[in-house]
Length: 113
Image 1 (cartoon, rainbow, N blue to C red):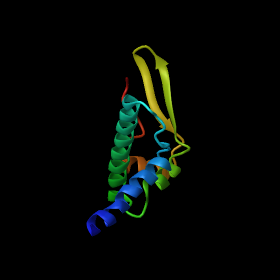
Image 2: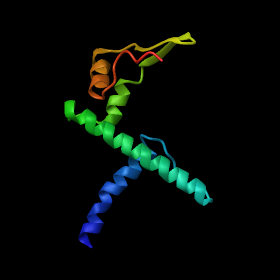
Image 3: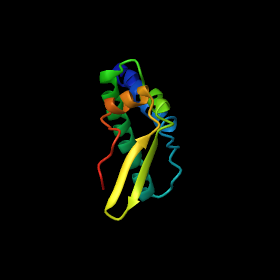
Image 4: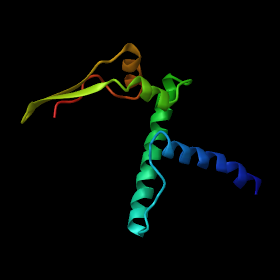
């Protein structure tokens, strides 16, 4: 009984992150297929959030993913070109933003499409 009671802290953190940082509101759907889609979206978003936070913690153990995203809020992704000649890159990177993107496995230049 004690293990179950104290395990709820982790579950509450997942739902708090889902409602806050991920902005996934509560399920207000009455059909099973919609509830299933919501649960799948919530689960996938939670997995991606957790993976990204663990990746970030390797280089910045004191920084949360929400703080890192705050540093990246002014990053702009640019797509230029037409047809097969399309280039993509990001602009307006501060030194900290560049370090955070590198820690998360992203690069300044995206592959050519």
